[in-house]
Amino acid sequence: MIQRWNLKQVEVLFNKPFIELIFKAQQIHRRHFNPLIIQISTLLSIKTGNCPEDCKYCAQSARYKTGLKSQGLMMIKEVLANASKAKAAGSNRFCMGAAWRNPHDRDMPYLEEIIREVKAIGMETCMTLGNLSSSQAKSLAKAGLDFYNHNLDTSPEFYKNITTTRNYQQRLNTLNKVSKAGIKICCGGIFGLGETIKDRASLLVQLANLPKPPESVPINMLVKIKGTPLENNDEIDSFEFIKTIAITRIMLPKSHIRLSAGRNQMSEQTQAMCFMAGANSIFYGCKLLTTPNSKEDKDIILFRKLGLKTEHNLHK
Ligand code: SF4
Image (cartoon, rainbow, N blue to C red; front, side, top):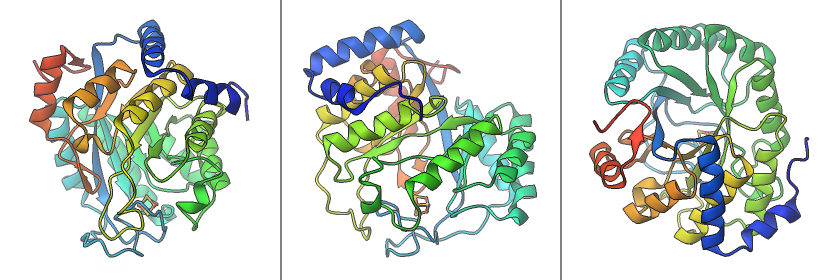
């Protein structure tokens, strides 16, 4: 692991006053990005539910009774219809997720064809499929996959409280294979899982010290899903969440930081503060895999109020 940051330095950041952090994050943000431009991605579940993993926050784990309707692999033409719709709505990246521990080799031709066809529409592609072997990562790269999403979720120390069916090192191994294959990395975490401030700092140290910092960093606020073990977790305080975004921006100055799950439960003011703290990407669309996302027109109204523009002028 490359030591760009250590835990002590990050804990110092977490102890800084909120206003100071926002100011520092905004200065760093402006050095690397236009602060008025937001990147937009759309996420589609191409295989839903019945997942063998036991991530305690997830509606798709086969272990929890959440009422989610499982669905097998989506037909390619349906995937493409969704991609075209997303592009027409202003999205420039199409992210596709399958609730698997890992893809089987028999699924590879299907996945490769989807990548080629979505790219032919003129969109960037991202997939999240679980663990990958080196040869699978290479095949996806060869088909033209731009990004692979594989979140670390939380700190290495807290990880076993959230998922027991795999370990942290397996996550790091897949990230490594993806990076070696030449695919850009989308990797972030979830806050509000019951982790301590130290865990938050420790997760951010992991992200910032990856051999190559992730190009895209989704920051999720836990969405408490009925039937999952975390359904009664305490809410994470909005200021704590915004502060975490600011620290992520300070530690990962050149990454796109994506305000991801949980945006639906945030006020417009909280979202605005997240953008001021350095978030510059969102998921757009009514569904974020299986949890509700902010309604599209609500986003357009908020962007107008804040004078924000998207990479593809969503709210012209
Ligand atoms: S987060 Fe992903 S791997 Fe974990 S249970 Fe949900 S779908 Fe499966």
